[in-house]
Image (cartoon, rainbow, N blue to C red; front, side):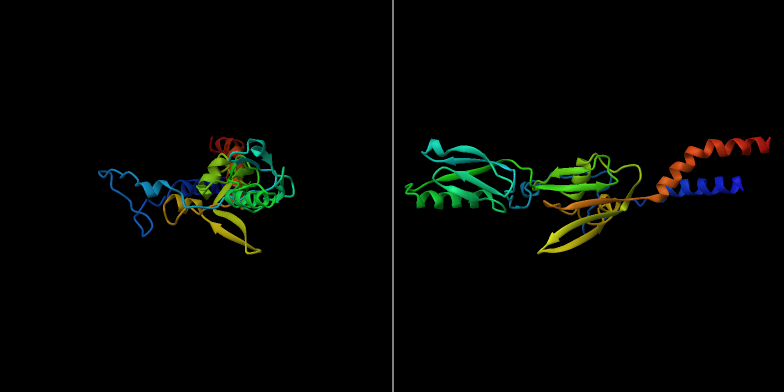
Length: 236
């Protein structure tokens, strides 16, 4: 019986180590031969597609009012998403871009008889633009989202997949138009270039699945010396 169990586990290990699919060209991926050098990217390849960065609660912004130094200041957005400025009063910044908040401050100052106000707003630190990475990664947690954040980069930010991660069961949860949606991804297929690395947006939740087979194999390997010892004794 022990021989059968050992043989079964050995076949599982061999199956896991073999059968890797080599990289092949697809409509989404061009694979170059060993003799060809990978060409450098062009300028447009290095520029991420524009994603508007929205201001949220507890973000810190820098407000500069041209020629009015008394109004120039660093402001932290409060927990309700609002900021308060002299003359301008209370401004709702939540869900707005920096330029939209600047226009709102200009309108408020103009209403208080500030002649031709010119306002510039920059986001200094953001704690609201984050994605949640959970499940079988080395360091689950909240991670900041930038214009270039993708699934693979998000997982790399969490120090990679854990020992028991299931590469073909990675879920991205997202709210679109008030509706909760989920996408299932296979990161090993993304690595092979089978399809593009999906973009990650603020408030996304990434959940990396668990592989019971990997756990079972690890547990069995840890017990293998205890199983092998009686077999050696029987064979002797």
